[in-house]
Image 1 (cartoon, rainbow, N blue to C red):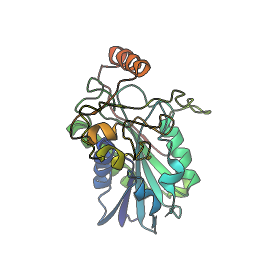
Image 2: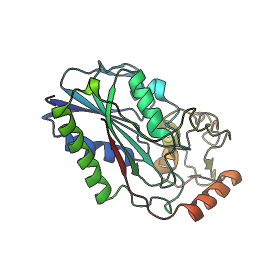
Image 3: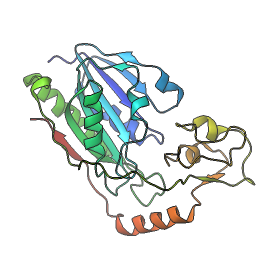
Length: 262
């Protein structure tokens, strides 16, 4: 296959996934490129029609060992047409569990042909002690190598004849069952609405930003990152307890894992 264009499709509230996806896309070394950033709520109402010669790079962060709960919206209005895809899952140095498997299954369901995949480390949404400073230069080099390996594979083999095996179990890991969300320090809040406007799932009440729907919230930390006054923070005791346990158990740096179809 001659790769004519890379199509980067990603959800990246805190930027780590976007950086890895771009590195993979650069490794594919196509003469043309297209980016479909699906992070904002509004972006998931637009789409694109992919064509012969395209290779997609599809990336999402991992939450509780699963892909984000927006997959129907993520792929909405994107007509894949059976193009090959390289899959990327970015996790906070704990575990990616079933995320790559779920992303493979979802991408197939929406018309893509997965031919390669990688699990990469990014800063955890809740704490710098897990994946702080990641993805780093070595991670991005590994992502670029994944893109080059996928391009070499597609130069020799028909994507429709390939089978991609990735770790994971089905049924998938149960989703989080606690309706938790970041809190707001009303004394610091300046009422700028940056948190509400940036929320990828519109979980924050536009009439009262101190109110967040814990069932809708992904705990992606986009609102924390977006607040210019530091008014948004993780303050729910059960979640703080989980963070402390994770920091104690998973601080040793992990390395990327990559997989090629056969």
